[in-house]
Length: 334
Image 1: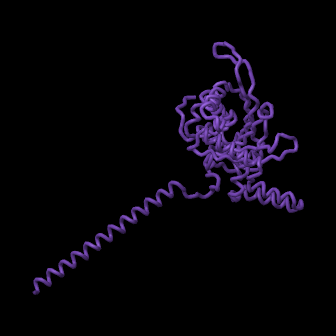
Image 2 (image 1 turned 180 degrees about the vertical axis):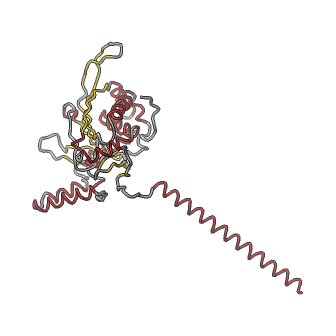
Image 3 (image 1 turned 90 degrees about the vertical axis):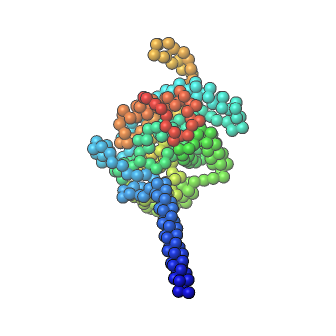
């Protein structure tokens, strides 16, 4: 009888030890899984460091550009203007082919230009830097912005359009985004937070307006401007683009703005015929377009800007690369 009791006791202890080990294994597995989730979350949402903003991460720059941030307090004090003429004959052929394949949602040369500029920024990431509060930041996203006329008339209202150029986007995505948002704005179906705020602002007395503006500037300087404004304000975009070709105009110089974080303004003129010459001096008439690029020289140097223009030229000469995701790097030697 005692022997049976001893065996039962040993069996009970074995079951208990097994349960304890199993529980420990379960807890260990759960902890490991939770750790992986936290690790993945940290990778997708890196911890904000001291000095970072909602829309950008502070970066350490060389001594010259650090000093320039203090010597040139205003963005308009540090402007560089580049006017470049691009051969767009391949762009037009590419657009015509795409529209023959799918005429239901037409692609326009303007969409190609916007996507090409966004692709250039992905290839040349220093173009996505900005200065605010005398500090240099890498912007968290690539944001393209435009002003949209509700109607092509002198007194027609101008509305703001922001396009988040995400790394997985291809040209068709950008075309749908621009066409869709433009139609909504022109029909009055959608308005940004900034426009709603401005409607209230213009009805306030001047003393109140001044207080509001100074407060907004202070918040932006210290990097604590609300996301609802940052994400809908064209002056907080990577590139502010203007399609002047749509009104039969050339691409002029356009100033930068001291308010906000926008470091690049790009004007695009009307597509027109012009003689061009190759390296052998052979000339022919082709379709070209002028780009006017105004940049903040505090974000990079002239050599970096010049190579960036060459990257843009390569993309416009090979527009089919825009069918690939924006974040996919090109194999370039420029």
